[in-house]
Image 1 (spheres, rainbow, N blue to C red):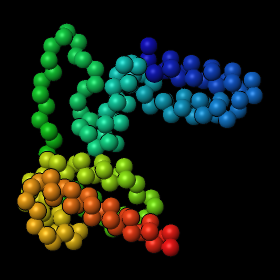
Image 2 (cartoon, rainbow, N blue to C red; image 1 turned 45 degrees about the horizontal axis):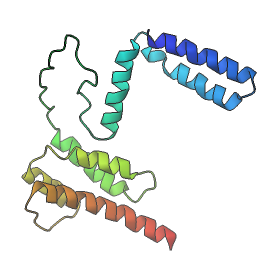
Image 3 (spheres, rainbow, N blue to C red; image 1 turned 45 degrees about the vertical axis):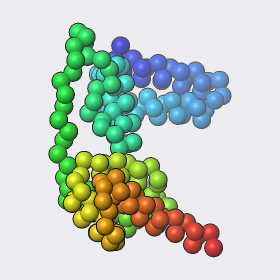
Length: 165
């Protein structure tokens, strides 16, 4: 079964619910059905794997790992982690730090960015920390990552506290 079959089932269910008076739920199902249009030719299993990778990505995890077992029972070849674009990550970190006081910045966004710092070396993390005002020397990679996270969360927290006053 392809996603198009799922679309059809959702559309049929939406019509049934609309006829029974549940118009808000019917509208939601119609929106979901329409949102699936770009994936209409994908098999459901492949689409489910895609959704799993998307969730992993939003959590800052490695999204390129297949979520289903490979056919044939064999092992999947180990994939090399993609190279980290240090400059882009530095810009993203600085931008997030600058916007941390905004209510639009969520703790999930902060956690996602912090998770992507793991592959960086201590010198790179030290440079990133200096860009957002961390001057104290940290001995380990995890200490640096924790300090960067704390710096951003402190900036966000101070904005929340001042809004409450």
